[in-house]
Image 1 (tube, rainbow, N blue to C red):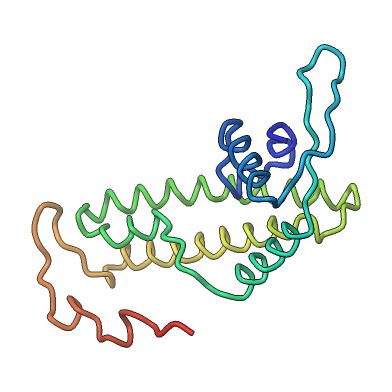
Image 2: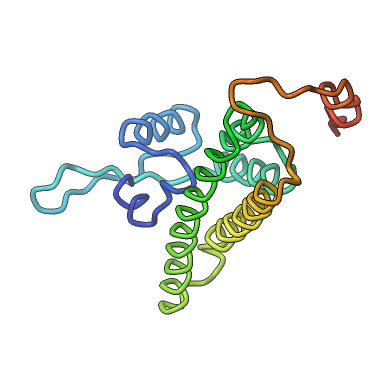
Length: 186
């Protein structure tokens, strides 16, 4: 399973290691969501257990997918945290770091485009790789946003303080109104 996940590059959308994968599968088995369907061995390779999803597992998987697809959640990306604290660095350093990030994101985008071309060439139904164009769209959006920030830094329209000093905070900016701080859950 681990090798297949790596081959499919699923490690790009979920953190996976052999140990965590085995713990997850055996936990699913203990909860009655999958069951061991058989074992086999290929040549000198270790014995391999095949699992299949149970009816209850398929039901819960469907419920979870419906929830994930329909309900936005804050996933707390680290980059958003970095942007919220970027004022601690100097404008020139931030500009350099963001330019570096854009270069790396362009390389990521090129890889995603290669993966798309690969899947299209093999006529793999898009339903199996819908996450790839989604990831590409997110990377494109980030690049566009960062280019906009760089333009604001360059033309001075984004006010910046000298690193190591405190920029004056306006009371309004320090605490957003309650309607901005949180949204009611449904």
